Image (cartoon, helix red, strand yellow):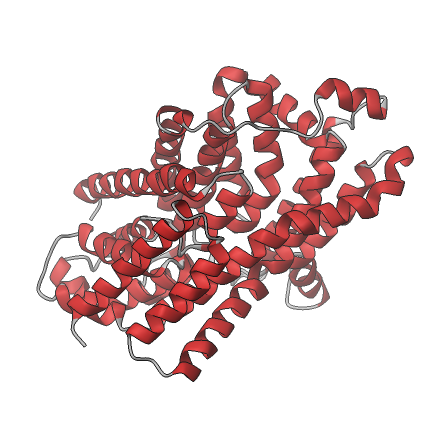
Length: 446
């Protein structure tokens, strides 16, 4: 099987997906599953293998984020129904001013994703972005793009996430140096996301459409929750996951006994989101607690479509990951020396073809490792720059084969065409700016 045929099949598959979803309005879940099967057939895979990959891909991705999405969606409904999201939005806007609201939501994503994954971070912060869009009088697309950028850059660059840690271990990068440089490199990427949101996403008109206005909420509840109470469920989630991250470091600051076990348990994202969900229920006024089941049902209903689409994306991704994409890309770059641009290009090609950021990071690190001497990247600093270059490539670009693409689009009321303009375009811009910044660093750091 030639490389040309392999990549032709992938390109045709992506085109078919885009046309079917945007022009013919076929539900993304159906398209993703059918295209996954079609790619498997085109590549000559046995039917049993195709279906095993589709089923395992669907199940694995839902196993990893299903509870997070469900619990996060329920929290989101409660925050919106009780007016807590509005209280948080007003508190942030009072602090930074409406003029800086887009930057504020991006920085909220930047900070929040240090302990969280971008998928769960987006689900948790989406209600605040919606409320801030309404209060600022701007399109939800602008807030969604900026929030996504802040979350995604931190997710890719900071060594508190599995893919980044795996890259550091494979390449031999110092975790401390990587953490420091990663936080720095994520800043221009986040700012580029803000700029893209203001200049491009502003042309996509998506009304915030909160269910109730501030006046209606006050009329319904008498008064809105306090600021601290409103933020409490999100703060709890972040704190629990941070404590688990601290407990997991090699120095074992909490020991290796009962306290570590406790933090391992309560800091697991699934458990942290569930505990945050229970805490959010205390926001419901006594007169409205009879509607708790209705809020839960609405959260489950809201997340059902997201879960189906993300599962379909997992099925498609599983088929792609079983193909010799990495081998064919690696063979194309033998004896090519482009400095930090080479790992970036390889990661970007894999990301665009395969979708799964963590898988792309691990695969690219494995592929690039033998090339480090020829690239002249053997010092601790150079290895760290290689890891960051791979991270920049692993976000370039997020589209229909990426679960995060569907999380952003579904929780922001974007249709697929709008999501390509906002999310895919933003990740391209952020990836390019990030690698340029990394290249500039490489001129001074060796």
